[in-house]
Amino acid sequence: SQTIHQWPATLVQPVGSPLSLECTVEGTSNPNLYWYRQAAGRGLQLLFYSVGIGQISSEVPQNLSASRPQDRQFILSSKKLLLSDSGFYLCAWRGRDTILFSPLHFGNGTRLTVT
Amino acid sequence: AQTVTQSQPEMSVQEAETVTLSCTYDTSESDYYLFWYKQPPSRQMILVIRQEAYKQQNATENRFSVNFQKAAKSFSLKISDSQLGDAAMYFCAYRSAPKAAGNKLTFGGGTRVLVKP
Image (cartoon, rainbow over all chains, first blue to last red; front, side, top):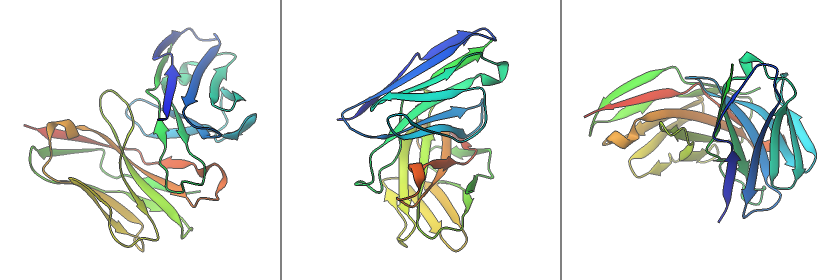
């Protein structure tokens, strides 16, 4: 069965420090991968998605970047964190179009607090 | 770009009663998918129910059912026989047709459901 791992679960970082959140998927190959952010009490905003190794699409301009160095690994990074980067970050994956109706499967999320 | 609107920030329901959550969306596409996700206090996102736009029959999953009105671009969720475990944030989401780049999900702002014992 497929599983998704996201870490760390919580993170407190000072303003100006770097960031690296990691997400890996097991039990599937060539998935679509996504990074979402959820501000407190609000909906999910898509930050990045990837349809293959090295292929990253950014949805909104921001202080963050994403990379996909391996097929099932998706990394969210920042060189210098801002206070506004605080939030709940969710990684998700979806199977390829052979399963047209497949939903997104989410990781457990990372709560990031920038101080 | 598609947008999803959930006009009810919070809904309260008595245990064993029924509650309906509203969702409207804006799109020019004819082929798409709609989803309801539940986010309990653990913050894990859990799929509740899904609907294909070309199917007129409303989807049902146990106590959860939808009222899909394609012409009105409305996709409401009904929770019957509400249980304490149903207390959570509920998000409506839209996804374009299969060949759209990335098959991204667009989420509404969420509705918090409170269940009173």
